[in-house]
Image 1 (spheres, rainbow, N blue to C red):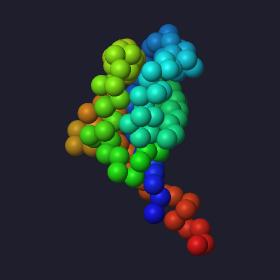
Image 2: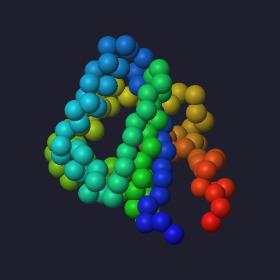
Image 3: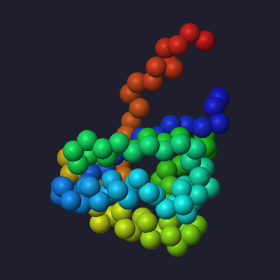
Image 4: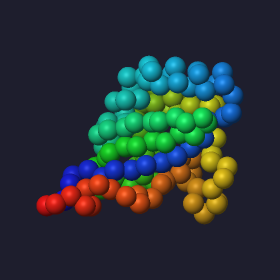
Length: 122
């Protein structure tokens, strides 16, 4: 069994071209304290993809990581991480086309429906 699990979450950006460009610029220069805090809560890899206003976040974290409990803990580790989280919310909004019972508190979790590893010969 692997020491890490994969996670996927989705969120939308506010539909404003200038805000989207500003969001992208921030993510080219994520504050050091934010990256350190994410690593310290057990996240090994993280990538965020953008299509139009839709964000898709893929990350790998410790096998015992629970996104509902553990993810936001990064904001408690340093004031800069908390500042970052609050700043990013100006650009973001919850998904609008997802049933309420499938929405997360902010980022919405996605179900894994395919993994090539399932079919590789062992």
